[in-house]
Length: 295
Image (cartoon, rainbow, N blue to C red; front, side, top):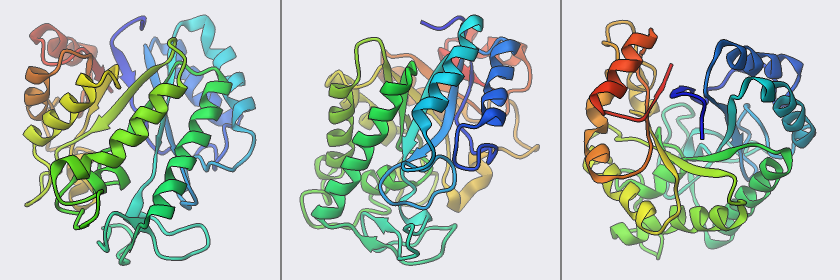
């Protein structure tokens, strides 16, 4: 239950330099004071990725979470933690090649990835487990698993990235396997009071996931009772101008891409995309295009 439908989606601030320090807490508290209903903390990375937002083995995140929650509590804002892995977009912490579903090349790093074996997949799932344990201990309100923007989970979901021939590749069922395994594990870990959702997107690239594919994936998660909400976004680092819309994009430019998911899913749907005023956000709600709007 949120106090309103205005959301601040997860994005890398660099403020905490890998920790939930006073400055990052102040950043979120300012949103709470301003009346935001839900804030999603920037990505908490898993496994040994060197991703520079919130590392899984950094400073005491649990203490930081508890301090943050105590300070936002008087304002009623809820707090979720986004969790994920960038896959072929980021090297391992020791500088070795990135992991991915296959030997693909990420737009940011331009280095061929190492296809993950079963041992590495198990290590990845352990990373998710450890991250979720910290979020639970920190007293947050929910978890969002990042499966968009061409990152690790979408690198398994998308035929554009996934060229595997084992049980994690090939057919749609096989490409869905790892995201399903992770979601099922996380759902079992969370207490009933905590929400669980996913961030998904069409890639807008030839051979990549379409709006219909996203609706199908979300439907599979929904029918298994694994998710409470869907956060829709757009694009990848190969077309980053769609991820973060430039000034030529109209307000709500991502909303039309959400229509297939909206039609297929009876869950709260979150959209974003260059909303600048509460009036623009309210129009989306009034038209029934989504349930939550991110600015």
